[in-house]
Length: 307
Image 1 (tube, helix red, strand yellow):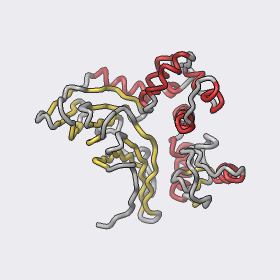
Image 2 (spheres, rainbow, N blue to C red):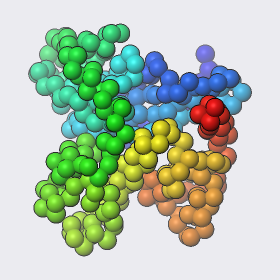
Image 3 (cartoon, helix red, strand yellow):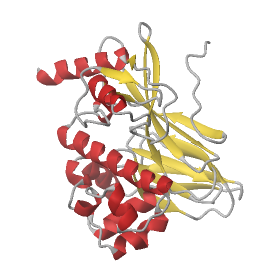
Image 4 (cartoon, rainbow, N blue to C red):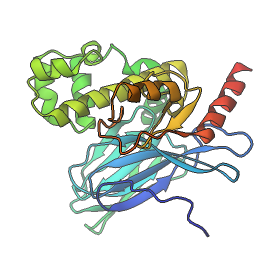
């Protein structure tokens, strides 16, 4: 065996990782994309997009971060079809996520000690969780749950202006921004208002003094907009440029590890913006590397859908 890639995936130690057995999209000529989940001591669960071909090599791209646990996460596992992801934590809870909508479906709190392992049955109707309390719990999903997951997947407008104030509050909690719920409710922020927030409104109207916190809110909103566009258009979100929110034609990899449309990123840098559009951190380099693997995948996706 040989090591294809090494990635610093979490700020603290990593405790578990799991591949989804179903590809994100069927590749041609040996090109396929898979989801990879990882979790760790930083209390986060991360989803990655993995591609590999013998000719073009291996690529690992961060897709999203799922929040919800308040202590280190010890285990994570995909359902057999990749529609759900489960995680277990030192906080004694088990979270079940919808991987398409990236929302929490269930929070299970029956264990009395650390949750150390979890696994889906191949049918997806059963879930097993194990804990330091010496018990294995078997959970059964009702048929309505499966319908709920499918209905969420089939409704591209779930990330639209139709969100209520309560929906926004739930979204804030899922993004690790629970402390802002009261402020947003005081300002009557629904889905429409959320998508139009600016750094000025967060500072002046919301009185959020922390620059890092304001940047995190805006970054999460941008990710939400990208997800809205990809869901409504049917375009895989890994094919959409984070700056233009359009399908990439000439993708390049920047020093932050994200892929962007070449022209958009060059314009971004030319305006003396040495920070990452995604993380708001200073870019250690302005060198842009062509992402040929992603470009080939986009072209094949276009060929398939144009037919």
